[in-house]
Length: 319
Ligand code: ADE
Ligand code: ZN
Image 1 (tube, rainbow, N blue to C red):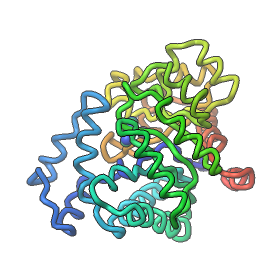
Image 2: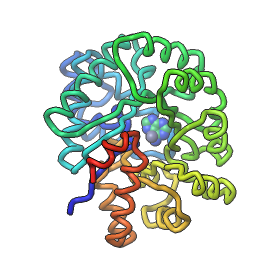
Image 3: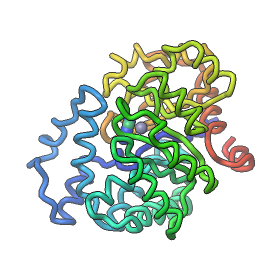
């Protein structure tokens, strides 16, 4: 039986493939700093999260119209469907576009329209999680959330991403309080490059229901115990961790230890156009490095379903 694949940590802007960057640049008359795909691809050697983000923010300058956001989303859903993904809870960074002069409703509306179409035509259901850039002012995030809540595009949840170190979760407590009051689901990146303390505060002060990455939690046994006791999901992204130098090689990834400890770990792709692969590629890399058993593969698939924000009937339908 093919295991149900669920993607819970995927930045839509991180699926912007080099070919699509050139296609959209041509469509929109955007001048790129690179003359060829090869020259662009040569930029994809990262030393840390910030070195990746610098390129990620430059590249998304080619996304300008509602149709561009729909194209980006549809291309991702086609690739996800080919990998066997049945349900995806995707991240989208509105601020990365509004600060460049793109209208919020064009960006978010283009994404939402393509997600609805993808559910119909590709059989991939989805949830839309708006992520706020933690290295920008919390007041800006709050204003965008208020605008979204008053606008035409419904969202399912909120998250926190971008440069982590120096931007602890508590800066965004008011944003999360509003999200909670509006009935949104709550997640945040924490413990990717940041310390375990950021995971504690994401739990205690933001009230997150999933921790994105969270792998530095392993440095704090009391935190691990809490995550296990609460069955708090961690959305782990192995190829991302290697490419952003959070771990040296895939063989050094702590996934086996996380499973042994009883953590509710899910496998995800983060920014697949940048990190060498989609969810199927992440699973294949783990398989090769750790020779996972059938029981371990099934556990990872079940964890993905359990950690999703689907209702019980939606979860049952995936098995
Ligand atoms: N934005 C896109 N990908 C990210 C990641 N892995 N961590 C933080 N912010 C991001
Ligand atoms: Zn991420």
